[in-house]
Every structure is written in structure tokens, then in C-alpha cells.
Length: 265
Length: 288
Image (tube, rainbow over all chains, first blue to last red; front, side):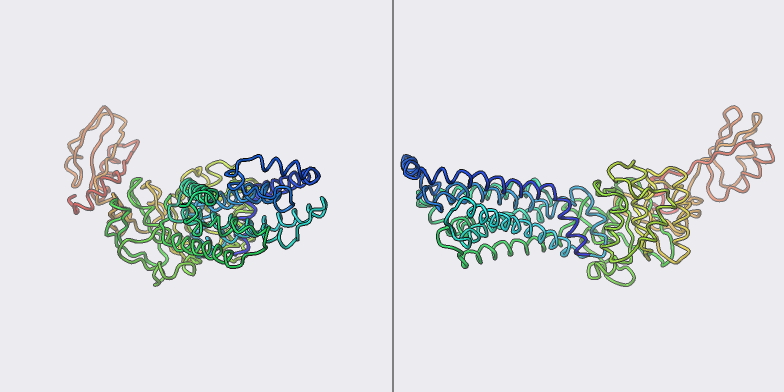
């Protein structure tokens, strides 16, 4: 019964999943294929990075652009990949508790002998599985790509950074799930979760520059995930656990809210 | 039970029993609370106050185990457009943890339903057939049917009515909502009339109708004298326009029809009382 629901959820999203996998692979391929050129022109690139104002270098974590880790961090992990994973988490998360209700198909689904908690828990599991699965895709793509272009970054670091990025998607996706379960409206879930994600991103980006942001940043899911810079020093178990607990708490809240709400036509 | 949405009232102080093995018609104009009632019974909506028990178990507590014995046909039908009919019905069967392939084939054959067509390509009436199969295929003990025949053509409607009869004969209980009196009359043992979220149960459809004023038009081969008709008990408002005599009747129509036949009546047209009319009279008490 759970299997049927899980399979259907994944099947309904198969185009989206294919698109995201393709996008991540293409992005990694393009960025890594450029890397040898960057490495060979290291000094020039260092000059280029130095040419940016310090504010920019801090905001976009542009230090050490000439090194492999600096390059990956600047080009992929400081903004592009987190935004992709957050987009996946939020757009999918916003649908978890809302699309069947908005489409009206929830009427029959929830009249079947399956509890509402199971329905939504299964759909949350599908979303979490896909976000984390995309993290695996990313880690494998980077691992293979790094080998091909002879990039000296340990696979464990690539995996740790991919994991942290996927966690960001999960954490902000969980916000969308909760808002969707409470409001029953996909547009609201999408809007609020994206607004929070943008605010979190701004706080995270400006933390090195603005004192207030720096004080807020320890409470920022972006900091627990993207901000720990796993590429430099590997997995941060404590921050990962905080992010996981944050996502789990919101998801439990979503299950409770979904269970209590009226399913209106 | 009472259900409020904020300040708005869905159903107010509604209380009734459904007997095991009967067909109960829920009758009322659109927006009268019929759908709300059925959705409360399924737990799709949570009750504001009161209690609903089905097969002796509280709806809120029993949840999934209770729903295993229920078949539901929603009034506002939405299916997964991307799936074929077969995929959809098998998906529903999987969530019921049942192998219903035989039953699906049998019902699809009966309603002339092509299982391999994509749901998104189906007409309104065909989608309704899918919903009917979905509600009946697992042989439920209780059926909650919200406007089940809307969109069905008359031939399919007749097949549906036959299915309801068979289902009742095997002992299942059926709650069926409709805004069409004639439909409920054909199918239901008893009828509950709803209006603006309130309910009054009346034992029997024929009784219900006979208690209220119906208008009857009688056509004669030639102009007819209204006086003998005015003398019949229960008959009032007798008018003659050319060869047609119109009157209002309360109670049995036997005497009126006997008089009409004696005068060579060639046509009889009876107009059922409107639902509003019936409801108003029920809540006002039997004035007629």
C-alpha cells in the first residue's frame, strides 16, 4: 500500500526528477570542464579574484579561487548548487500536502483505508529521498568529474559538501511542507518558503560583513548546511544533526497539521 | 452533529440513524449540507461537535479500519488524468490492499468502460462510470454516494440503479445524495431532506410525497365540468382551461383518478412538490 503510493508519487514527478538530474550533471560537467583552464592560468585567476573588492570576495566566498577547493566552492557550492537544491526542496515540498487537495483527488485517496499520517509521511519520504538522492547524484558526478580533470579534492570532501547542500534543500523543503500542510495552499507554501530561503541566503551572504547578520547566522539553516564549508574540512556532524532535526521537527509538525485539517472541496 | 467553518455553518444539529441494509436518500438543494454530511462520515472533515458512529465505531477513532468497509463516490469528481482507467483502479485497489482485478473487469464490462483509455481523455459521463466502479469494486458494507448519477446517460443510470438494488440485496447499506426527487424515489427506502444545513428525516418517500400538495393536470377529449372534481376530498384549486383540468391534491389520488377515468381522461400529468416546498412543510409541521 505504501509502495503503491510511493511509486505513484515518484512517477508523478518523474519529469521533474529527470530535469533536475540532467541539470545537475550538465552544471557539474560545464564547471569541471573549465577547471583545467583555470588551473593552468592560476596566477591570472588569482589576479582576477584579487581584482574584486573585498566585500565581493567575502560575500561569494571567493578566496583561493585558483585552488581546486576554492574553485568548486566559488563556482558551485557557495550559491548555485544550494539554490538548485533549495529550489527542488521547496517546489516539491510545497506540493507534498497540497496538490491532491487542490486537484480534488484527495477526496478518494483519503477515503481509502490508509491513515492521513501515512499518506503525508510517504509523500514526505519521497521528497526527502529524491533531494538526498540528487545529493548522491551530485557527489558521484563530482567524484567522477574530479578524477577526469585531475582535480585533487578527496572524494570524502566532495561527498560531505554534496550532503550539506542536499541538507539545505531538505531543510527549506521542510518549511514548504509545513506551510502547505497548515494552509492547504501550494502557492502560499511556495511563497513563504522561498521568502524564508531568500532571507536566509541574504543573512548568510552578508554575515561576514554585517554585524547583525553575523549574530543571526548561527540560527540560520543556510549556515548549518552550506555555511560549514565541508569542502575545506569535511563533514560537520553537529551542524548536520541540527539541520536534520530542524527538518524532522517541521515535517512532524506537517504530519500533525495535515491530520487535523479539513479536506475541503 | 454540527460542523462549522469559522462562523459559517455547514450542518447544524443534524441527528439521524441509518438502518443496516437500507438505502437512505439524502435530498436537498445544492449547498444544503448533503456533501458536508457525507464528508464528515468519512473523516474528510472534522466534526465541530457531536458524534458519528458507523458500525458502532466512532469515525474519529476507527479511521482506516472503518474506511476499509466503505465505498465513496465524491460529488466533485477528480481523478488522476495521466493514468489509464486500469492503472487508477488498480492503484485504489492497492491502497485497499486487495486484489480486485476480477471485480474491476466485471464492473467495467457491465458499464462498458474501456480500461485502457487515459482518464484525461474521457468524457464527464465516462469519468463518472470510473468513479462508480471505484466505489463498488471492493464490495463495501456501506456506500456513500454523492450525486452518483450526475453526468450518466439514462441507459447507464438504469444500470447504476440495478447495481444499487443488487448491492442492497446483498445486505449493504447505502447513503445516496441527490437534488432530484424522482431519482431518490426510485432508489431509496427512506429519505432525509436537508436545507440550509438542517435535516428532517421522513420515513418513506411515497408517504412523504402524499403528505404534500401535488399539482395534477388532467386532459380530456372535450371541455369538462369542474364541479364534481371540486367535491372530491383532498382536491382543491380546480381550474379548467379548454380541455385541461388542473387541481391540487393532498393524500391519495384514487377518488380523483376514478372520476377522471369515468369522464374519459386521455392524459394525466402529475407535478411533484418542489424540495423547498417539502422541506418548508416538514419543518413547519404537517399542515396539509
